[in-house]
Length: 206
Image (cartoon, rainbow, N blue to C red; front, side):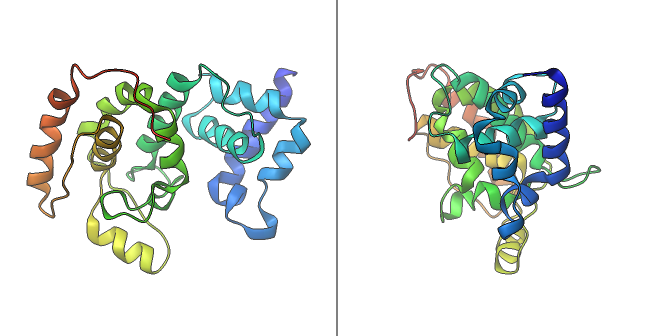
């Protein structure tokens, strides 16, 4: 695959964003970018290469998950743990534009599934934990869109660190109760690195 082809696909992914790839109904571009498998090698390179942005890498991985039944290949657990942890980091709102929303991660402590991105993060298993640990002090807010979804998501006041703690807890089997009070959440999160230290490294969530 020529580097120019990978660069063009990266630009297409970034321009379309998650919504344009998967949430635009008949106009969704994920299948077009997959190109009946013709762009598989370029998408694999995008997902694994640090030359590309966090957003481009996770979007490439998502197109592969959606179209390639053999993805991910064996041995990609640590790589995908990193890619999806960085995707969680860029979900946090701040001065930058919103590129991913909480909808893709589910409602965490309040059930209703783990969202598409959350499910793929958990599929990386224990390898994801070390990439999530640095996010436990990230207070950036997570934005939800939609009507009822936005209302519920806004009421929960989730931050990146809350989501990281939830996924670490789920991967390591550590109970992470939800607290309305931010101060109580922070107390739970502060204890999490100690709670997971020394655990085995063979856990994989299916």
